[in-house]
Length: 248
Length: 267
Image 1 (cartoon, chains in turn blue, orange):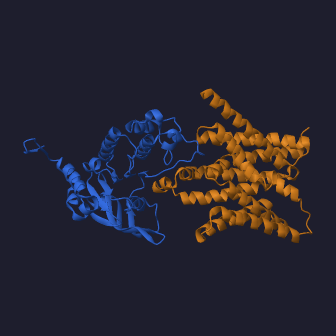
Image 2 (tube, rainbow over the protein chains, first blue to last red; image 1 turned 60 degrees about the horizontal axis):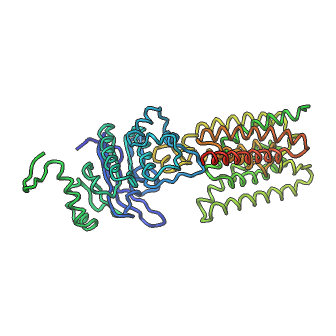
Image 3 (tube, each protein chain N blue to C red; image 1 turned 135 degrees about the vertical axis):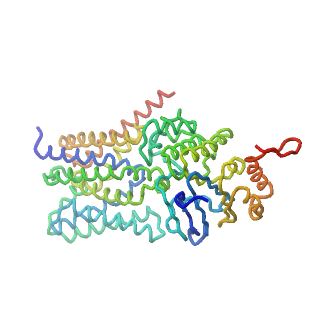
């Protein structure tokens, strides 16, 4: 296991309640350098809430959060930009940190939206905006990336490319990623640790462990379990048409 | 042709316009027009207290407006009333209390019209110092909190998540609002200060494509409004505040024509 120095953020039995209702309770997890932790769970299971606890957006929480970095990039699930603000993509890129032109261009190129640099944010499509959000989050070379449904509304081929990009960023920058996603297929091949939420941590572990877990099966169904384990398999061997198992 | 008092007024007005330009942009972006109104209504109370205690007007208005702003933040936390109701409550009650206090101060000669609508004759050298030193301080502080304030205006959670402390920026901005009202009250009058904040910025919004441009155009619009307004105020013997605001309205209408032209070009 990695040493404590690699921990970027750690939640200890963290929970958050709003109007006397618990949105999420008793969550313990940690994100380390170079690792991808994925939160999965049904709608309303507290995934975004958990991310916001980790980010320090929610302050009156149960339990505790230990955050060891200030270099954070965040892609929120929902964001609405007001039309009263004349904001171009370029202005948005330097919202929380001043960056030079090369860095901005590089990030926008990576997510495939460099041609939109001078466009008004309000004129972008949902998928384009999502790519800009991701570019902004990675451009500041963060130590911790929190991505809440980062590829929603992105076209199918783009989705795969962006997930590959996220994996690449995690390797190259050695940053820790807290990822929230519904798409079990695409995510699981890259994830190091899965936390399955349903108002509390219902199970967690490697994708393989979680796939075997009965609570996970009850929550997502047998089919989802197979998806998860299939991707786990892909790492070390392939199934040939004769039914043989071949090592990679 | 230019009398001494007129040059003073011009210098004062230019100072005010440079500061209201950027602040006005934030008022529009953050939807704070009614908040500005509330603070300026409460300024009447500040003025009457200044008169009754022989205190500096700008300082007294600053204190009272800041107190009203802090009260608002507390009320928002402690009651379930919507924000606009709380603003209305504070605006009208502080205006009423201010007027009642004026009633008690019958021994002092009050130029109530000058108070409400501005009076260029009343601008003294001391006022100039307050406007320019106060204005420079406001701009300096605004520059320091620009990044967190602007980022949280775009999206609060992004700013908070990425460590910019938006709550502190918001609190400081609230105090800056009270300060700009305090230093511009003699020029524009308390009923029209919000107009000075909003109208040049609204004009700028119509013709700008980035936040920096909007701030620049807003300052230029404010300067033109002050110059146009003050000259016509001298020419037609009208109160300075309404003349400046009317001039800014004129510029706003011009900016609308610009939009129509650019739409035509697109077609």
